[in-house]
Length: 289
Image 1 (cartoon, rainbow, N blue to C red):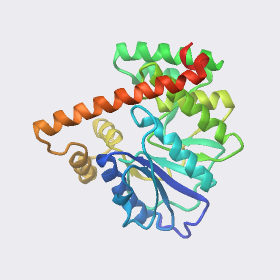
Image 2 (tube, rainbow, N blue to C red; image 1 turned 90 degrees about the vertical axis):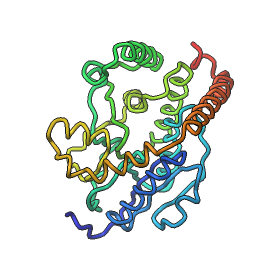
Image 3 (tube, rainbow, N blue to C red; image 1 turned 90 degrees about the horizontal axis):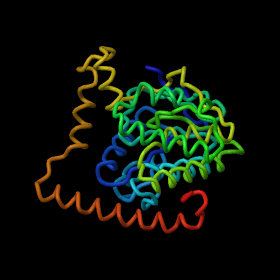
């Protein structure tokens, strides 16, 4: 284990926890960080601050979603984190930490991603559904043209874990990242944060680095499943975390609970879409052209 000597550098962790499922995930993450980075804070934006009131390492901010499908709300988390610290490390709430995090992490200018590669590689090798690939690619090309960005210069960032070093372009990055998110949702796409980060970085000249140091040992369900399939990890080595993920993600619910949940989700999304489309009228040329 890499036992930390002094964990007091100017950086924090941050995540987004909206809804009971992700509050449970985020609490597990906070407990991991309390153990493996004991002098660090994690900033959590959540609609249920009371869920974290027993965690001393959490800086919790009450937050109501400002997007259609929540995924783009992480722009507000990053904005807050970098208003308080020089650097931040973002985790998806369902990430687990497996070992001590060193205090001397080297924050390179811009973004350092656990995984990143050219945006064209993503569409050539990662996406499986031809229908989704075609639709998303058309939107990506349209957005790149709107921003006057060459796709050859764009990297895709796996958005579940990455680091950000604050500089004079940080707020411009966040503002444009958020704007692309609103544009994607306007066009019916409710994901794509990683490629939007790449578009903005290319537009503003912000570097994206591959995390060669691999200084954080972590568990992510999707990542673990892939490593198991490639025989890079033995199933029993991560079984505890796999079981905990399934326990939180797929709780037992009655038929009527499932129906009620789907209806509430549909109504909420339709309301948010109406609000989004109306508010986007104030920048009509960007969002509707």
